[in-house]
Length: 138
Image (cartoon, rainbow, N blue to C red; front, side, top):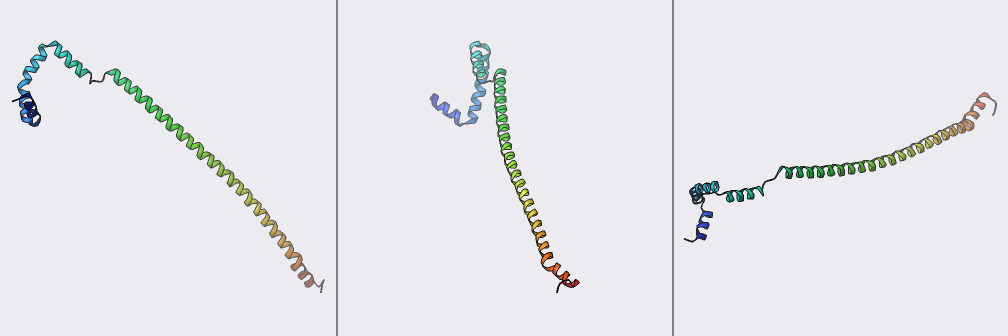
């Protein structure tokens, strides 16, 4: 049986793979225990996959900077939106004040018109009736 066929069989059949591993594991452990260069190679391969404290500190620093920048960006955006809303509210306040002034002007004009109508009624209808009732005019 060729090596390619053996490897293919190990990949396909889990039971055979487990038997093979349990068969060769004692030899692998003994070889690791005795061969310093093999242990160093294995440790170097593992170390390449492990994050160090410095790696984690660097990542923490970069994440903190990223989060701080995003928070600052968000604060700036919210501040800008609030300024825009405040400007619109100020504009509406000015328009409301202008409408209040116009309503006051109309109210004054209506009062003046009513007073003028009352005076006209007094002068044209009520005064002559009173004078006739008193017999001062015929």
